[in-house]
Each structure stands twice: as C-alpha cells, then as structure tokens.
Length: 587
Image (tube, rainbow, N blue to C red; front, top):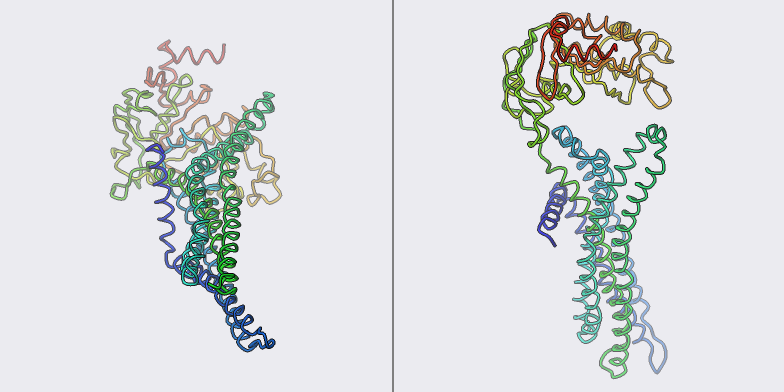
C-alpha cells in the first residue's frame, strides 16, 4: 500500500476512534452486554449435552426411567440464559443505536462548524457536491457501519474464544478437528480483506463525484436545456455512474465472498466433527452426548467467522467514509483571532489601500502594488474590463482572502488587526449573484441581524420598488420564499438590495447591484441608493457606466492595476481608457 494511502487510512482510523472515545462508557456497557450474551450462547450447548446425557442414562435394558425433574431444572436454566441473552442483546442494540445517532450528529455539527472556519479559497478549488456528500453520505455510512460493526466484532470474538475454550474442556481431539478445519477460513478472509479496502475507498469517492454531478447539472437545468446539452449531460452522468457501479460491484463482490466461504468452512467443520465424533463414540472413548454438544459448538464456532467477515466489511466502509470526513476536518482553517483586541465601532469611513498585492494562487498575481486613499463619505466607482480585478478588490476589502503584501486600513486601523466579524459588521454588501434563503421575506431582509420593525421594512421596500410586490403577496412579509412562489431575477436582486439597506452599515459595497433590473426600476433604485449612500463610504462596481457618473472617485482598473483615477468629467477629458470604455457603450 502506498505511503499516502497508509497515512489516509491511519487518519481515518484515528478520526473514527476519536469520535467513539466520546461515548466510551456506553460502548463499554454495550460491549459487556454483547460479551455476556455471547457467553450465554457459548455455554448453552453444555446444558443441552447434560439433557442428552440424562435422557441416555434413563434409557436402560430394564426400561425407561428418565429423571424429568433434572431435565426440567436444566431446561429452566437454559430458558433463563436464552432470555437474559435476548434482553442483553436488545440493550446493546439500543445503546449502539443511541451512540451512532449521536456520533453522526456530532460529525455533521463539526463539518458545519468547519465550513464556517474554512477559507473561501477551499471552495474555489473543491466541488460543492463533493463537500455535500461528506456531510450526508459519508457521515451516514460512518454512523451506520460503526453501529452494526463494533458490537458484531466484539460478539464474534467473544463467541469464538469462548467456543474454543469450551471445546477443549469438553474433548480436545474433537476441538483440534474443528479448529483445523476452520483455519482455511482465516486464510481466505485475510486475503480478501487485503484486496477489498481500496475498492471501498474508491466507492465513496465515486459516490461523491456522482453527487457533485447531480448537484451541478440539476441546479443548472435551464442552461442544460437551453443549450440542448441533455445528451452530453447524460453521457457524463453515465460515465460517473458506471465508475460507481464498478467500484461498488468490486467492493461488494469481495466482501460478499466472505459469507459463502465461511458457510463452506462451517459445513466442512460440521462434517469433520461428525465423522471424528462418531468414530470416538463407537470406540467407547466418548459418550454420544459429547457429539451432540460438539455439533452445536461447531455451529457456534464457525458463526463468528461469518460475523467477523460481516463486521470487518462494515468497518471497511466506515473507515473509507471516515477518511473523507477526516480529510475535510483536517483542511486549513482561518487564522485564530481570539487575541485581537482592536475594534471598530464608530466608523467614519476613511479607507486606505497601501501597496496591496494579491493572487488566488502563489504563481499568479492579480492585484499589483495597488494604492489609493478614499475619504469618508465618498462614492467610489470601480470600472474596467472583465478580469481586471474589480471583484477581487472587494473580496480583499471584506477580508474573504488575505493579502500577499501591503495593507488595507479603515479609519487608520489595519483590517488585519481586527476580527473578521467586526469587518463584516462594518460593510453592507450586494452582489450580482442573488442569494435568497429558505424562509419568509422578513427573515431574508433581517438575515444575520436583529429584528427590524415591519414599518421600517416596508419603508425600505418602498424605496427599492418592492412595496407593490410585497403587498400583492398572500401573506405580505410573512410569505415564505419557496418553489411555489415565482420570483423573477429582478425581484430577487431587489430583495438583496433591501437586505443591505436594512443592515444600515457604515460602508457599502455594490457589485453590479442593478444588473438584473429594468431601466425604470434601476432609476428608482439609483435614487434610493443615493439616499442610502449619503454620508457613507460606498464602493460600486458597475459595467453600465451611466449609473456611476455622479461618483466622487472613479478607479479604472486593468490587469490588476489602477490605470486612471478621477471623477467622470476628469477622466473624460483625459481621453484615455475610461473615455474609450464609456463611449463604447453608446456607439
């Protein structure tokens, strides 16, 4: 096995053990219950042998004189043992179900918390469907497999060892016969386990790829149909699905071999014990009751082999899924900011970019030595061709990404000296991608903030041109945004603008905030925005330059650098890049 695969397996096992440690007492009790239940199963053949011997001794040449009282006593003990084994088996199953459910809950919570601590560049390089698969399929596989496998393995081991001891105590020659015929099972099981683990890991990975494909293509179903890409989509899905089928088939085939092989070994041991026992009984070395006991012992002895095979198969699935969970939990996190004491509470809005350099990857710099000073209350427009670095500049301002070089300050305080939560409290943000969450319109407008009165929310809706839309809804602000409610792209964008206005942050960021609305609505929003941005520092990214003519400062960016700065009139009089871009929209 390659070193990397060994390391991943070790990490997966360590992660699984760390989650099990939280419930060590309950697992210990469940294991004791399973062990006790197995012990009752192991010693019960000895009592059946006693019943057989009592009946045999009661049948003589002079007639039948069976001690029914003794048989009743032994039968009562057997019933009590079987009843206790049943109760203990139920208790261990109940405890393990409780443990597995809580372990799954803890894993999902840890992944959810980890997502909040994971840098955004992780999601730039990983598929959302793959991450989603870790939260759902992998966690479910770990909890279900661990639930069924841990106690199964313990019960099988106890039964196996107990049967071995009881067989040697009862008759050593027949014990050697049973063990010798069962050794074949161990060798076969070891060989299968060595080959099957990689297929369990590959199956979990293939399942994540299928989920990622479904999440991507189902979410973009309108694009798929608009471009007649159904055939291509189906081909890609078939390819991923076929890969999943192959890995699942191989994993299940190898693990499925164990049960019939163990059945064959059990039958072989059963036949060997019957032949040897019959020979010993006819020679007078043992009584017939010993043969009866060993027939039960062999069944109990080979049954743990099948249980071991089943338990190990389940643990392989758990380890494979646990590895994917551990891999995500081990990802790099955002730096700890508990030691930062600086805080911006009363913000004027002076923003300074001081020789800022940044690249999403170390080998490709997007922003080159960018510097600019923005005074409080200024409206700053950032324009330029696609790929110039406009949105990247905003991401750096929000500290979604850390700078490679330089510094960004607000009111003279560097952003890297205050917490991200404080930074996000300072900025209100509207993106061109409209994100609405499940819940009512009120919940979306109040998202992440304290409740605002309905009167204030309706006033904001009026400023954004949403009042008529909200008034026509059956439940007004309480209307749930769901698949049954048709909301246009423009209305979604208006809702995100209203959300930013409700936040009432001292600094605003508007990234193509009116790209999905019509000209008349845009004019209304522009008027509302002018009122909203009055006295506040605001950054506006726009491709329709007519919307930013009144900006106090316009930054024309190209290739990650600011090429031209000034207001609209100044830049037009420069007859440079900005003028060419502006005129191109009216050519």
